[in-house]
Length: 67
Image (tube, rainbow, N blue to C red):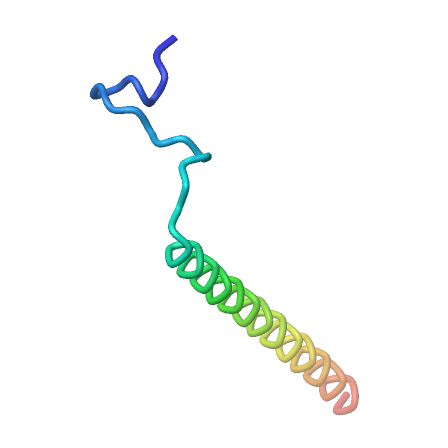
């Protein structure tokens, strides 16, 4: 079986390859920002969904009250 590392004659570096402390900090900061961005996006979606549900309920109540 051919592995991806064999294609092109290049091997992928092992996960155990030492990484400099600066790169580790950069990765941690970028992951933190990505996680925060996802949290914000999910919160925005949740808020928008709640607003839409409330609007639909208000419209339904208004329609019932005018009948």
